[in-house]
Image 1 (cartoon, rainbow, N blue to C red):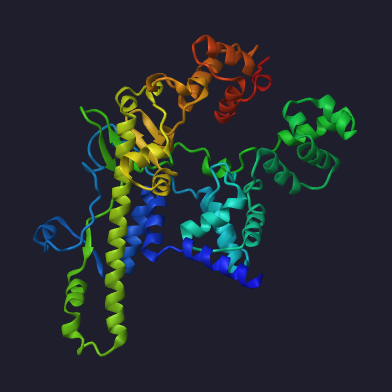
Image 2: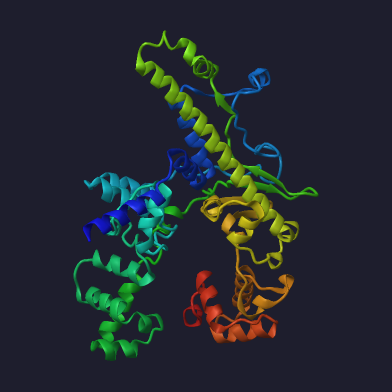
Length: 465
């Protein structure tokens, strides 16, 4: 039995281990534009074999020299509607704050690795959207690190102790419960914990009579507990990442100019053209001739390591930029009507598999190219994931031009809610009926789902007296 378990573990490790260059490529795919710029700058400082090519030396360089260009049809500093895109705020992000706190704890190396990975998977509100059970495989695939589930669970427990309290939660009830645990003990706190842990559905519907009867506590205690819950922050991470500021902290990764007959795509990087320095390139070429002179194995190893590192870095960077351009070009092609009209109703159903079919890129590459990346358009900055949407409702079988996407559903719900009488807000059932009357055949459950995604409270909470 022991031998069988060992064989299974070995097989799993062989299928998940990635090469060093593959890991570098994967990490580059996940980087945003500013992160990539910083990575290139760090690598150039650390590796003397890597150098920038200025315009003059670029023309005089040998044809065999390895180079990397930004893969942009035009410079990201061209005069256009995008010239006023602001730089990022220097205030620390939620990620930076949490990573800094982890650095102050005395954790086992594996637990620290798990906690750092979990922090990297939190959304802007501090919520863990990924099922913790899947994080072990995610880490093995993206980082080539195998950790037991127990260690990942320990890492999550550590993250849930960090500030602002509530980060690392897997649901709203969980987020609020974490915050309550850090409040001084009191009857109100204990009642609030019971409400969230035992009767959350009744609480979300504000059925206080059910809370009274099921928890066997008085109406006064229920009211006091609910008042306490209302003082909690449902989006603790946003208090850091969305701190009040007049500066837009988002730097787009891609700029698309739609002013001409064809959209012009630019990767928003400040990356110079790179090549292996002539000294290292010549040293590698003449290595056999110079072998006798390089008696010291350390000298030979230094030259080869730096040369290979520079070559692999340039190649990984080329592949990253090519992948980004390929994916964004495919998005523009599939969503061309939207880019031509700025009309959200022109968005067509599009999923990762559609981009995969068009580009030949692997689904994991496309996912990393679009995760946490933004595109600047003349009418605003949007997440790249904005353009992905599935077909919704009974219209799924209709012709492509008539199919509903989740973006259209969200836009219609927003339109109806914005126009409602705030003294008599519309229920989900009424919104469903209005949309059906307009020819949008979707269910009440779908309306509730997308209303919640838009951050629109239910009707009873939108009522204004």
